[in-house]
Length: 85
Image 1 (cartoon, rainbow, N blue to C red):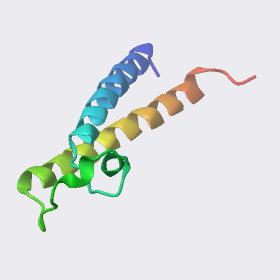
Image 2: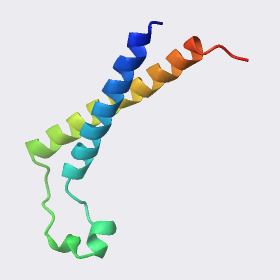
Image 3: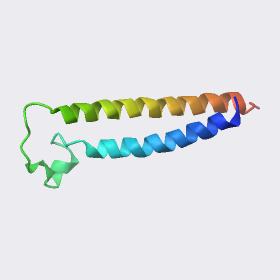
């Protein structure tokens, strides 16, 4: 595979890593985790999920799949590009 493929995968991996981190931080805490230990669990939980939360979940899963595909693509590229000894 050409070298530009690896550079494209690396750039895409870095971008999706940053976006995935931001998307995960945007999620609201469900309670019982580290946030509730330090006083973050004071808010009341609503029964249903809003459309924004569902879309945030979808975007997080989509970016996670792209992130995983970049890692697999880089691994396959390295296996084919780097000769084994």
